[in-house]
Length: 388
Image (cartoon, rainbow, N blue to C red; front, top):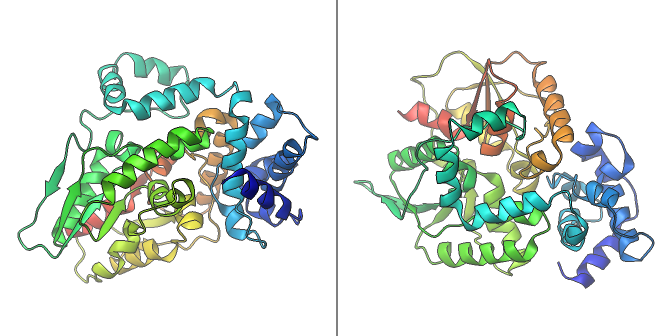
């Protein structure tokens, strides 16, 4: 979003407040400046000189989860999410409280393998101390091996198609098991799977910190890599990554990968109903909607249809609650993030269920903190359990 677009979008707002009804941070703390309308008013004031940059304004603008619910519901079609991205880029130099987080995020995205090896080696020394001191918003466990080390092509005897996987940072470095589950399911269905070398972070974590130029460099690398592959689809287990590849890259680099899909979109018509279902108990389950899946990609029914097809006893919930993860948000807004998590958990506790299913590794990381006595699993794990 250039300066002219940014100003024009800000001017469109008529302060109707529709966005507030869908804002998860405003629901957690009903202060005007913690809602979408309030943040737009602050950025408008900054733009016309009525306000000057301050720590307080930075905290309000950077407290948005960037879930996209407000943009999804705005009657005037204002791209509120992109306005917040632009506002953060402008405020970056005035935002001192996230300076360390920017440094760590940039180092990790530039040196992911070094970061992974360091965390892996310090698994039993540094991480227990960090977890005990509550430095991180969740207890972190690093697997011994990541999902991919180099280019991998997983072939099948009777190939019906070819797809690529955009692994994403959390899947690759924290939950390689769900990546393996996806590969297994795709192979069973007859798909050759490519995990290309050279993939970098999708760039969204850097954009959320106002690091637009750095995010653009990552986007260019990923586009150049995945656009050259001869595949029918690029799949990801993370809705944020899929949203970036498909919808946000066109906004920041002018081109995207329009054949990027969430796994539920891709698998829906490839999985048939099964009468003799194995490995599934009578457990009742809830499906948790990741924000970027629901509001960004508009995928709501597909995961539920798949779960219904394979015989899962799925409870229909009346609402969808943000778990409060939201990438870098849970690091820089710990208190707000925890409040949102508690709200989400308390809402689900109204229902009698044994398993919580979602389609986002970040949501799994967040929700697992509070559901120690219940399973929190990725949709692909449930699908794999049916096939194997």
